Amino acid sequence: MQKRAQNLFKRFNNLKVLIIGDVMIDRYLTGSIDRISPEAPVPVVQLREEEIRLGGAANVALNIAALGAQAYLCSVIGSDDNGKRFLDLLPAHHLLNDGIVLSKKRQTTTKTRILAANQHLLRVDREDTFDLTKKEGKKILEKVNNILSDNEVDVILFQDYNKGVLTKKLIKSVVKIALRKGIATAVDPKKKNFWAYKKVNLFKPNLKEIRESLPIEIKTSEASLEETGKQIRKRLKNDFSLITLSEKGLFYDDKKSAKIIPTRPRQIRDVCGAGDTVIAVAACGLGLGLSMKDIAILSNLAGGQVCEKVGVHPLDKSQLEKEYSDLLEKK
Image 1 (cartoon, rainbow, N blue to C red):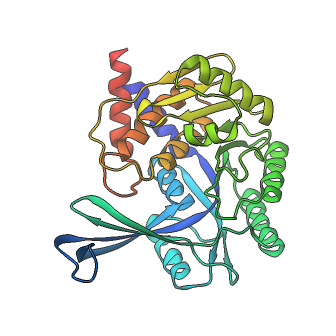
Image 2: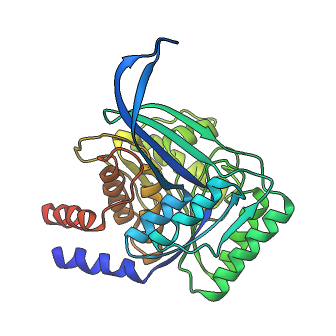
């Protein structure tokens, strides 16, 4: 079983994945609290450390790279100081800036989290959420075409945070290209363009998103979720659905079977970034042609793993391989 896991995880190294979506900067201000402000009844954080990390679709790219696959990132950032910081972070993570478009009309999305004693106290967001201009949309589509022309991409992953990069027009254009070229597609959707991803292969909403987007009662039972999967296919004509259920695990539907994969017991410290990890692993599994059951098992393990750390972190490939190998041994 260990050999089987090793062989599978070696195969990730041969994958090439194009990620298109909303990138951002995750900024962490960490300190301690020992008094209340005399100006208002709020805690005073004595700042100890400031850290800047790649976030959003860029964190998905980090997870894909952590699996050993080659990640290509396409997005739009602002021509501002945070945009410069974003570009400066890419080389250290072996990510190229070839697919990044600079915009003078929008700011770089930045999430600032304030923490003390490993607890989130506050988050401050700086962002624009309006759609790309026609000119910006044309530029990013050119970037996508250039990457696909120069590289044999196995999977295109749409990572949507409702920040305006993934417009309906861009989604339709890229899906059309993928269908023509025979490239697999995976989507982590958000509400605004939830039903725009027609004819994608793998659709991965979370439970809250799908409850907000379908006019039916959705329970966390296999029967209810199986009906949900049918409703999704009816609207999107997709092949597979993967629904994250928070602490209850993952539900997968591949037309032939529909099952819930429960979570394993863990010390949960922070759920930030878990969805990024799940879709990254799921997309790579799709690229390798794994069964939806194996994709769900791997994605579930990886999503749980990153919840054991405070802040947004990419997965640990060696830990994931060991956990998967241990799970195979128990079967």
